[in-house]
Image (cartoon, rainbow, N blue to C red; front, top):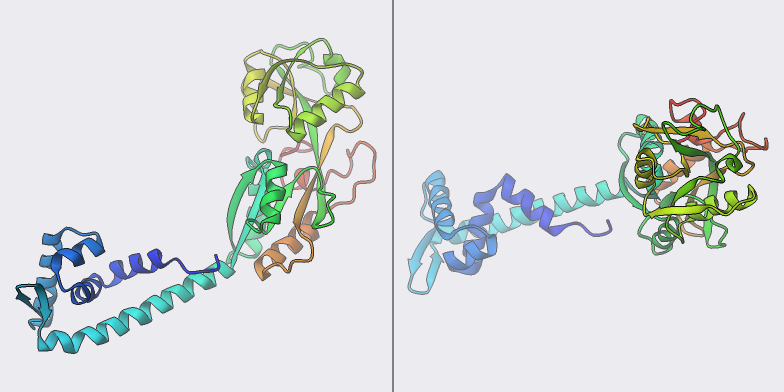
Length: 328
């Protein structure tokens, strides 16, 4: 937020000192009706409040004239100090807003990371820096990069890792993918499975164009089959619901909590994971709060994964959760 919210300032003034605001408006407009309209209050209410203000001061401030309202001599003496006081308060409130904005990070992240992974990361950061606040946005990977490029977010947690020269990125870790199957499925009791074991099943998938859909298709092709798609959905939570209803199986990130009617079977296939990274605009200086958060994420969670199946060095998405070696 680069500019203070004037509406917010005026709302605060109306809460802190409504009589001063209303008196200044009447003096400015010269008519009760116009002042009431400008303030967004009923005319009778404004009339009562103005009379109450005069009673508090034990002084007549306004007098009726054919054209509306005019200030008395006492009112003329008071109005300029009131305006100055209100202006000083507005300036102070605006400065408070700007200061608060400077302590805010705009963070974007994938929908599939919003149930537990990102909230857990923010909780840990908040323990260290409780004065830094966040404005959060969720979107697809492509849209997150667009928001980042346009400056609408300062940082984003995304997958796959961006490879564009104008985007800086720190690899935070990996998120394993599982095969979600109905509770009575023939693979439900398996400790893990190769994806090829489900080649004859109907699949429920995300819509084409989504990177998770691309990954799922590639995993199926690598396993030697073309997935038979029964349903397409816009979100992973819908996929889980379709699986729980017995309408197919799905390749998804592990759920943050058990889903009724659904079993998640870890996949043994090479490449059954996605890399998660923290991205920012290269060559653009981040505000201090965003720098602090970026460094925290890198220092605390960035992991170089060297083993082939990532089983012994899972990265951020296993570290910050409480579900053993499951992700998200």
